[in-house]
Image (tube, rainbow, N blue to C red; front, top):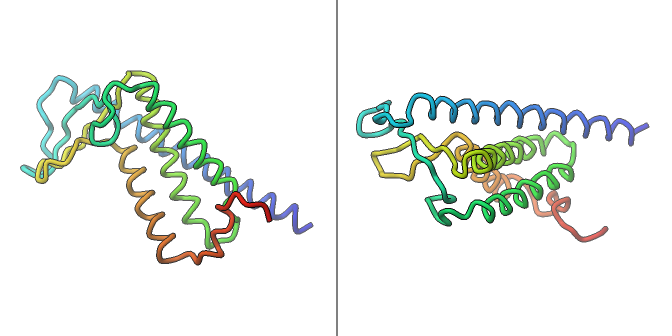
Length: 174
């Protein structure tokens, strides 16, 4: 009976992860649609003068514009990356302590898929958020998911989880 309860809990958590990823993905794609519709070919839309603006950019590379025009390579790396994170999602224990990890992995997956969709559809990723104050590279909502999810996951691994609690990440057989 306990095993069935554990399987049902795992299914509920994974269903939540899936629904959350879809919602995040739809939001990302909607913001990019609006960027194409409202910003492409237009002057930047200033949110906070000299600090933040929406400015349309077609990024044909990866983070910070590296690997320009390497669509197939970037799609393959993205697919491997998203597949690995999904595999880890399946391995995360169902205890409440690991719910944050589910959330952060889901954020990262949604961001990765969001940018892969762009790359597949357009041959580039639609970027539009620009911090002009520090001349930071233009980015998008999917990039926010990936960066926030990765940073917070790093913090969890560093300060919250103990080494033995992360045994599920190991590929060694018990």
